[in-house]
Length: 335
Image (cartoon, rainbow, N blue to C red):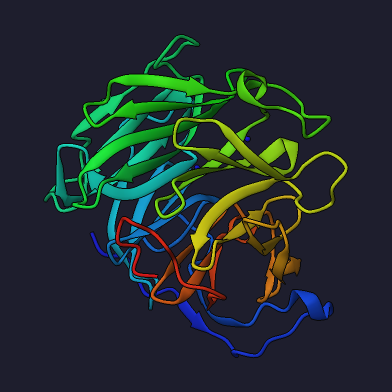
């Protein structure tokens, strides 16, 4: 193209500034470093928070639950098989079988399936999986992310899965993991006119559910835009895209209060805070580089307890800043 650990947190000044005033990244602390041990990273490319937990997956197919203060690996395991390739996305949400328990959904990209773990289990083995290779209903080529819709009681209603690889679409499943429908197809967007069956994606890398607005938010990475859709997949609006310099390969998404989103721009080496209604940029954080306060190919961002954890993938670390807004996660993100 992803046991207890050792303490790998380094504290840095809270007012570190970069050359561009509009791109100040005031880093509170750095978690992790390159390596193969718990608490270290081998090109991390998936991050998720929920129920007070912070999870990261890297190119070694290593899944780690981290202490958000210290970076200590509280849980550490690998996905069952990974010779063909590694996962790229994960999501913390209630289990489809029991909304009272916290689940971890892993987009097992190169095995064309989604794995589901019970985060409260004594051993981390998948308790369920769904999907298989193919382009038919309920099948995947390269699944990239998962989003979970729950009802007011916390029970799972729907599961949304994004995928790429020539089968670029969003598929919708019920709580029993049965396929319901999909929307979108592969295409390079040269205009903003798609609607209905004309929706096209080019690597929909991340998806999120806004339970308040009743919308699905999609980072259409290689079309350089963010899409807003109804829960059934009808297009509401595109932000960015052709003729716009708003995004450069948006890979990661985290929805925040005030109808906002934090977008990790893989190609822009920055985090952008946007208003989802207007498309207005509310803040830009980070510039390209290797120093603390700079970013290299960030794949994602997650908000937990008022802090934003930036997946600084090319630098094999997390950089933590005060979040410009708190998470809206219906799945107990703690933001």
